[in-house]
Length: 163
Image (cartoon, rainbow, N blue to C red; front, side, top):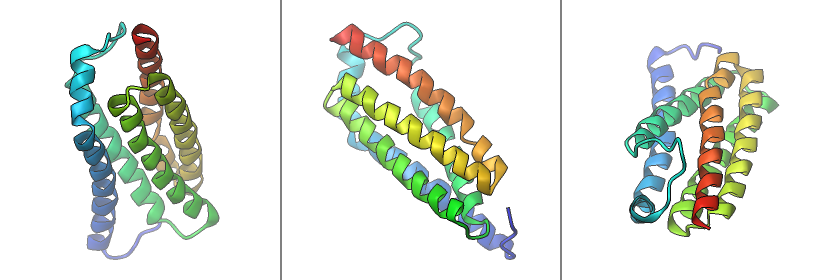
């Protein structure tokens, strides 16, 4: 990552990208909270389904890692991969946001799995683009990718158990 010169500017870049990611995640959770409650009370959960408290903790960490990666890419010299990486960052956040509605609000578990596969593909591509611009930024997305694979198992199992 190329230095932006002013350390306060660098801190603000990190702050804004992390806060942006956290706000998107928090907003999706807030807007789908009733659906989450219905899911928690009525859906049959699969084996290996973690306690409810794990999800907000994990997502808070993952959104922070996403934001840090995006900030590092943003602070890097302009390039086509930088532009595409930041666009993929925004796109995958949008897909992530949509998944919450499909899964929790509409309870369309199979459709949610399809959305999750699209999310996994977009995050994988984003990580590749991030890595081309700033290696650490790409590697910071690895926990997110593993979490999405685990979420895919949970999502598919919820569909199967509640069909």
